[in-house]
Image (cartoon, rainbow, N blue to C red; front, side):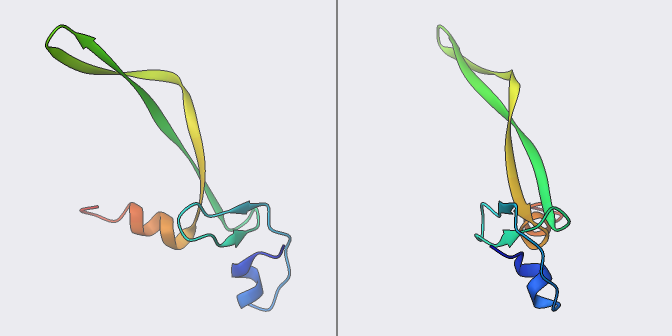
Amino acid sequence: MVCYVCAQSGERSEAVAICIICGMALCKEHLVREELPVWEKLHDGLVERRQELPARLPRFLCGDCHRALHQPGA
């Protein structure tokens, strides 16, 4: 599979990931890797609270989707 961003500019780079939002194939140069926290719900009687777990969840995004998710007010 070929990186979509590279293909648009006439280049040819092997894709190594897929954006989880739009499905675009991406090479190492054009992917954005984020690590999301994972939370556990804990119940103490009537009170519910969350605790962050040590392992994080990786995700791959294209630049456009990353900018859309992290724009001011999002």
